[in-house]
Image 1: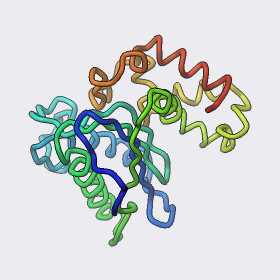
Image 2: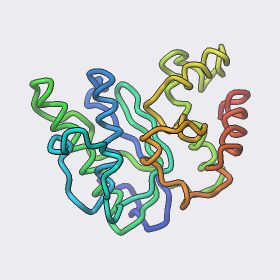
Image 3: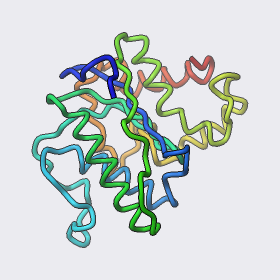
Length: 217
């Protein structure tokens, strides 16, 4: 697919993909958790198979050596995925996405007894070319799961802010909890340092989220 641009090192991109025909791509929480593990495991120049890890070993304790991308934010939805990525090495984003999506589809298809394509290819990408757009993504991506309880929140605003906050505090499958300071193994998925500190610090993130709650972009 000709996106009209090439991924360039140190540039940031909003990555998006969804299930073919908008199909559900997770069979339950274990599948969501598997995809999170793959976000960590596949971000490496090394080759791993999540099915062959030693029993009792945490994926997040594996030494990955050189990574392919920097992950700034993510959100998993029942039929699609949002990622905020920075190209770390030439070809890093393309290789990371290929490894992650292929690995997940193989495990999911084997588990569900299905064949064929699970996720749309090629994945969609948009260059983040301004601080304003980056700020919007740092709010929008982690808050995207609110759609599950308030489908029109982006267009009409959040109807019940307390309910939305409680939902996000219990939703494990995005980077929201990590930026809110919750300690968990999945913290290691993110690579915050290369991204602007005005978006990655807890206080900055809380302020950004507060603005989104008051006035969705």
